[in-house]
Image (cartoon, rainbow, N blue to C red; front, side):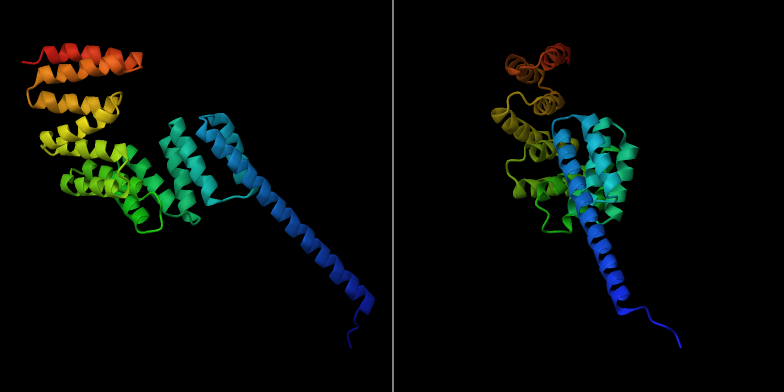
Length: 256
């Protein structure tokens, strides 16, 4: 017949195990709080374009509590800012494998567009839009439109950019990309109207001026193109943009 430990010894053992479990739980909680703090500091550093500090804090958070989707997403964006697209993709995929949602799918779509992998970008953007709770629907539709335009599916791309404007009428990027797509699809007049609408409220918007000049040259209207460039050169606060405008004016003057 087996012997049993005395009751007092059993109670003591249970109390010890309970204390260990409590201490372990407190340590886990402390680690999570510290990891969260490092994450917040890292994101703040990202916003201030302090990349070394952002990497330091985000990597520390990831080492303390591995595979947090938000941390991995932030690290992916940090690598994107640093110019390492492959490293960025590695972290986006890790985030998605660990339960990241629509926001990361959309960020990944943006990265894939930059890598010119348009069919994959379309798939990621659509996955993001599958979640109707995602608050930045306009950004997802812009990424979808970029992916479609990259595949020369201009009609579908135009619809996507129009959807982006529906969700956020103040999104200038959606208007700009819609204008670009009209231009690419052989509709310069529609593109011109949109470029001019941007310039009327944002006269220093170089991308809109570039687009407008392109479609004016396509329409064989070099004088109008030079006028747009001249107006831009007077209002821009950037010496680089002013030099670009003056140089482009000279080229526009050489158009037949």
